[in-house]
Length: 281
Image (cartoon, rainbow, N blue to C red; front, side):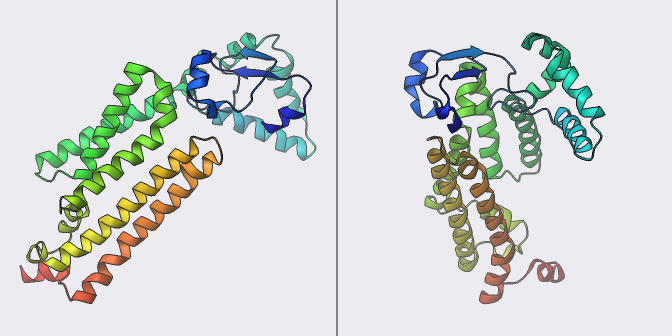
């Protein structure tokens, strides 16, 4: 985007034209200021993606990549056919979209966060219902259900932009708040999962509670860090790194800690294992 600064004239193609009030309310989102003209072109980024509107058309990109790879090996037939069909022949952007087809466009819209929210909500309703039936409700699973329900409510009442812009802050922030609350209440949320794998005689043992306080603290710090990173990403710099890469690394480290720390703690305090509990019963 910074290459536009070398141009004598700048014409920006956008999915939606918003009011000046919207721009002033969040100036960090303006990545190309002082353009000479603004052109509204829905699906103008196709076959790539437009954040908050649609995902990339992976099938179309694979078709292009295959044609380009064939051309690199000396066979330009497929690439020339692609360029004729999608670049040279359509007289207007509307002609191009008609060529792509409404079915294809609807499919990439289905990859929009709204569809993901609906799928997530349905999955969490099924999971929480099952846990409730067996008397094993989990705090974190209920939190996930609440997040998806709140997300869908936000999309329905205010539109997709608010959720698309703040979904990472909301997601990590909700989990961080709940995790901190369980620590302050003296009932760390990892305790619910740990009791499913530990013998009943250690459920209320101080070392066992301490272990889960430590584990929940680690996850609380991860959620808090990722919330802060999502807030920093709103400034528009290193968005992919702050929104996705670093949080993914922290989650991997958290799961690795979950896997190895309980066994280390059990050996340190000579706590019985789940296998030993089964043998005793």
